[in-house]
Amino acid sequence: MKALVYARYSTHKQDGGISIENQIARCKEYAKFKGFQVIDIIQDLAISGGVNKARQGFMDLLTTVEQGECDLILTYDLTRLSREMLSLLALERFLNEYDCLLYTVEGQVDTSSVEGFMSFAVKAFFGEVERRTVKHRTKKAMEHLKNNGKVYNHDPYGWKREGDNLVEVLQEQKVIQLVNGSYSEGLRLADIQRMLNKRGIKTRVGAEWQPQQVKNLIEGYRDTKKQRTTEIGIATKAFIQAIA
Image 1 (cartoon, rainbow, N blue to C red):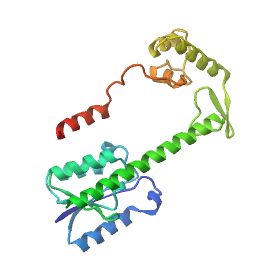
Image 2 (tube, rainbow, N blue to C red):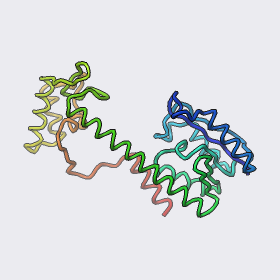
Image 3 (tube, helix red, strand yellow):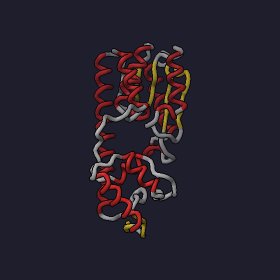
């Protein structure tokens, strides 16, 4: 069987020691053990797995599968392909459409059987749980730092950095109070945006206000209308319709 090897690392630290060279070597060893013929090796260097279309190697992988040039995809572990369950499940469905299998060295994923697919799906699920857990913990940590006046990834509007602490910027705090007061009186985001711009109140960088920037200043903001369609939403809807 013809195998296409895929390897990726996110940063120059190479994801905790799993170097690109190590990934490729392990995949070659596994292919030899299983009797697979490695026809090509695709790499994505120093790039996150979060945005699929930004990974040229990953996109080349999809094209190779479409052209029927390989029988299986072999990678070190599932996280090399993606850390998101939806992306992994969609990828497996895509591979299945073209009679292409998925194997990993670590975790022993093998979609050549129903049992193997079940193992793959479980690993994708737990990977998603881990990803969301990390995201949740990071968000809570950032909120804790902000609430305690500590510096984190950037200086939020209304605050400035002094050493490791954040101190209030009086003029910006007045804008925040104005925005929240207007919102509590029933003004919409667009109304508040126009008011700020009409009064000549600029953002920190001296530009006019946009709705999202106004929204970020409102404590406890709740959307009153359904969220507008997004690129991911449109693509996901089309995917669901296609596989139904």
